[in-house]
Image (cartoon, rainbow, N blue to C red):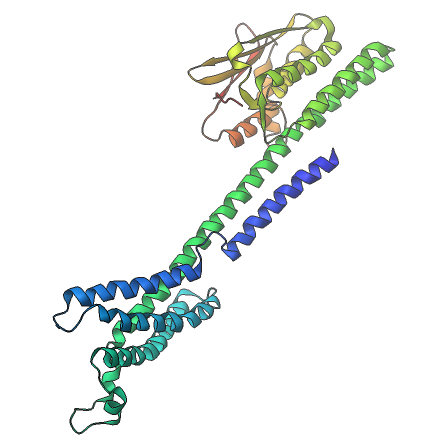
Length: 389
């Protein structure tokens, strides 16, 4: 039993660790190399067609794609170091991060612009670039012309930098959201488990106390019968995962085990009426959802009656919802039960436990109501969605 619980806890812990690692490794993110190459290839294609279709120069044709391809390759190589630089800048505050991006983009643009211009001029215009840079008596020489379109190059690198951070932030945010959801799921599991396990010690104490009384009275046969039923009930309780739901049919069987134990205690003082519609039996319900309701009826109704105690259990389907009802005919239950819940709002079991479990399992899609019966008694109604295995 303990090994099974440890294995389950280990699986949830491993799941959490895997989700945590994804935040830093960005396993769900597309390949950087794929995006990098596709981005600069897109640059080459877009500007090639821009030059071919919209330029007014007659000698410009598909040959412009060659210098643009070389230019794009230069940009792809020059922006690679930025990737490793930016990796070190994730923890910077926004102002410093923007400053780093601007400076880095300007430095890369300052290198890319002359290399790009020399390539374009040399291939497109057959210009003797090196002769021109040295100066020529026939041509006007202005060395700063080599930085033509620096602002354009800076803009392209700046866009690349922002895309790099934008894509990475997007996928990191997605992974962190996944991690948050996984943490919430584990918290949800732990909360259900904690609430469900509150039932067992409470019920166990009452039953063992009754068995002890039977032994002291010398009624060994009844004591032995209660022990057998108790062991069967506890096996059912501990073998079922509190995070999972079970068919109502199995829940009813567990409730009957509990009621058989209580009938041994109260003998003729307790009568049981069970009405379960056939279509409701296979529907899923939280495990041990009825037992605390029955236990409250026993504690606050049957235990206070000398004879004629009655517990009614109903389950039926209506309007695509599963209706569960546990009622008794005990005297003065509402006042005592309300006082009980007020004195133990967080640590109590019974109705408080049921309320919290339903809130966790069906946050916005359940109904829980307690009411007084006429002429006497108490009733608890639960309405949850119909859910098949």
